[in-house]
Image 1 (cartoon, one colour):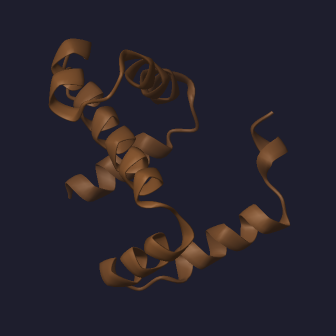
Image 2 (cartoon, rainbow, N blue to C red; image 1 turned 90 degrees about the vertical axis):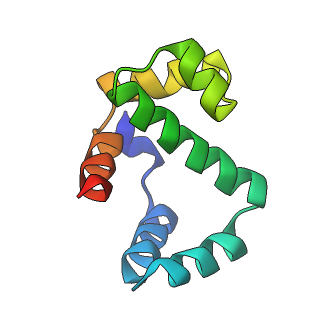
Length: 95
């Protein structure tokens, strides 16, 4: 089921992301490819994942990030049953 969304266009997006050399290049692409709201929502989800992985409670996370309990629950589901993308990047950015 996870492969249903993968196609030529999403592969192109992945190649584009992999081609970026530094944080400024990532900012440039994000600014062009997504709205500020979409970027902020992605950043919020990553922070929710970080806080969940550190054992914070839903109320603490909601207060700190402004995320709804539905968003927190969704992120928790993917932390537990997803493709481990959150875990992968959280481990890498921790280093």
